Amino acid sequence: MIWQWIRFGLVAALLLSGLFTLVVALLGLFRFHFALNRIHAAAMADTLSLLLFIAAVAVAVGFHAVAWKLALVVALQWCTSPLSSHMLSRFEYMADDNLSAHVDISDAALREEGEAK
Image (cartoon, rainbow, N blue to C red):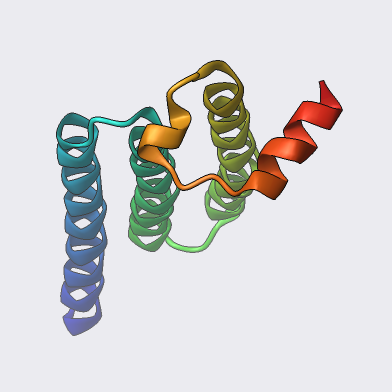
């Protein structure tokens, strides 16, 4: 009986933590004016909040085969989300002509980029 209440409290805490992470990221998406900051806020939100939500579901249903499938979902998300965020950031770096107004870019990085083109 007491174990069910402890499990319920843990599930509620994980869900509220995931919801808090999503709300903070949403505020970051609207508050930040620069695209790279928005990409970072979105990438952090989907990886951390997904982990918290899936951990809550795994605790709620118990550690059965469903929990292993959910762990696979988290692993795939952790592999793909940073890659897509990196590609979007790379595109912003290459496409934005006024990037130096927002970011401190060293001369070495500019020379390397010029040589790559």
